[in-house]
Image 1 (cartoon, rainbow, N blue to C red):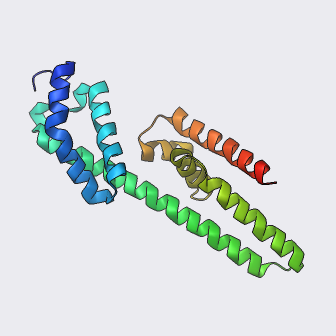
Image 2 (tube, rainbow, N blue to C red):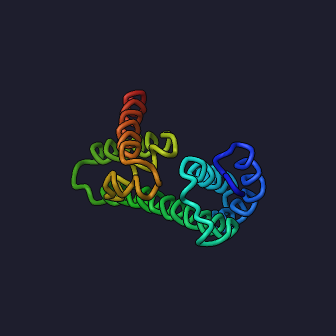
Length: 175
């Protein structure tokens, strides 16, 4: 491809290499929808920053394989961290209910609040849920979340803020 900033050239590039990127991403993620997201993000980044591919460093085929694999691994790690944080939250909820020295009525109220909180978090859009869980259960900073999701810092902060706001809304609906 001589000029992948030209829409026709870029379309041909996408048609030629997107299947390879999809194949690589599916192997890592074992999730066709997530793999498609990775490939879309990868080509969007290539469109926005055509200098990210340097033909002097290798072929487009190698570049697509490497970037698809790297981004898929990042996404897999992020999803694994989210799942682990939710599991920790659920475990802490069960443990604190068992360990509570309060009366049975207080333990029941605490357990119900935890269930409502988990329900509110699960209802969030995936990007907001991931950001909230990584920040509050995983202990990650907004910068770490932004780097892991390959988004600007402001986007990560917005996802956390919007996720918390929506979770509060879900909790007030349940009350």
